[in-house]
Length: 116
Image (cartoon, rainbow, N blue to C red; front, side, top):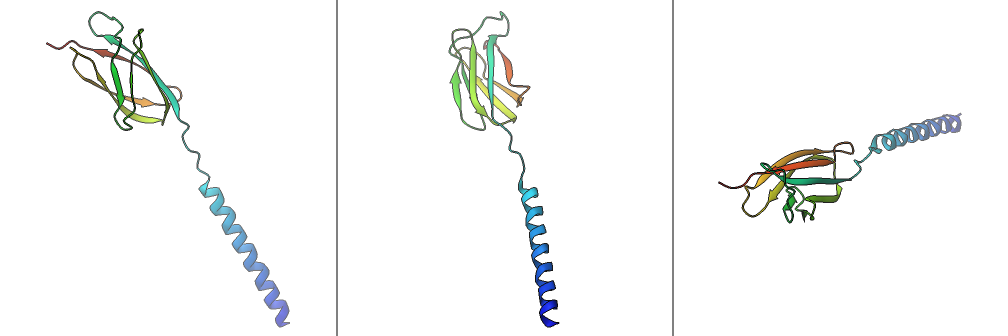
């Protein structure tokens, strides 16, 4: 009788521990946001002219790039979320553009204004 009670107690303990482990495993499985490519264009605010050689930096990560001959820039593997883009070019005012990056919202157009 004593062995029977111990056996039942042991089986119950194993069932409870197994159920707890399964619950913890399912709670841990949180999907991580998938990095996306962020791209954009930099233009003169008054003329709409595409600007070449403009420095574009993601403030939170320190990643930096420059616009090509068509005023385009791009970053690979940017985490989704709000980022500040710091844009600098000779003779233009520095622009800080906040942009919420996501898979559906991964392009931005930045207008720079000439210094007074």
